[in-house]
Image (cartoon, rainbow, N blue to C red; front, side):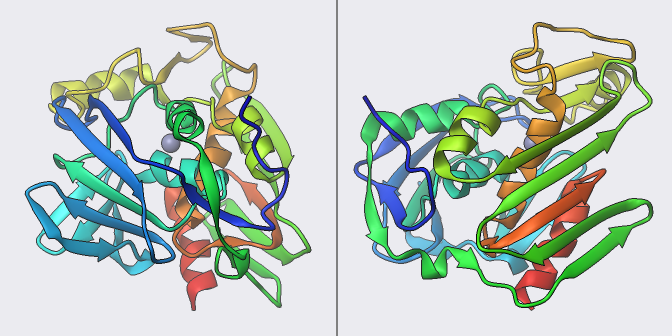
Length: 278
Ligand SMILES: [Zn+2]
C-alpha cells in the first residue's frame, strides 16, 4: 500500500514514467502528456514534436487567461497547467520532465486526484534535500487586490488558512485550515474540483472558449444549489481554492509560512508568487 510522506523533509521525484490522456478545456481535443523523472531540480517541459527543445518552467513565463493559467514557452503557449503543478508541488515532487502532445494539459475531473493516483501507481523516490523546494522567507508579506487579501508570515512549516465569501447560497462563507504535507494534500485538497457558475458557463460555451468544459470536469453552481451534485466535501470550493494556491506558488517554491488568504484568486496568488521571487 502506497503511503505519502507526512512532511516535506525530503524532495521526491517519480520512480517511473506516466502517460495520461484527456480532453483539453479550451480546445475540447484530446491531449496527451508523459511525465518522467528528470536530473535537474524543477519542472521542465518539451513538446512531442520538438523533443530536444526543453524549457524550465519559471514564474516569469506565467500568464493567465480568463479561464486558466498558461505558460509561454518559446513561441507557444501551454494552457491549463495549474492543477498539474499543484499536484506535483503538493505531493513534494520536483525533478520532473513533462512532454506534451498538444497545447494543453488535460483537465481530467477538474481536481488533482487523478494525477495523484498516477503518481501512486508508478511510485516516488527521493530526489534531494528540500532546500530548493521551499521558499524561506524572513519577513511578513501582506498584499491585496481590492478587498481580497493574501499574507505570508514566516513559520517552521507551511500552513494555509483560506476564506471565501460568496453571496450564492450554495457556496456562502467557507474557511479551511491545513498544515500542508504530501499526505494532508492528497487526502484533503487533491480531490476538490474546480467550480464555476451556470450563467458564466453558458456565456463561455457560446463564445466557443470552453469546448472541453462539461459537468464532468467542474462543479457548476446555480445560485442556491449545485447543478451536478453530490459534492466530494461539503466545503469543496474552498479546498479547491487552496489547490489553486499551491499550483500558483509551485514555481517559486512553497513558502515556509503561515499563509492567510481572503477571497483568493489566481491573480491574487500571482502577487504573492512575484513578491516571493523578488
Ligand atoms: Zn483550479
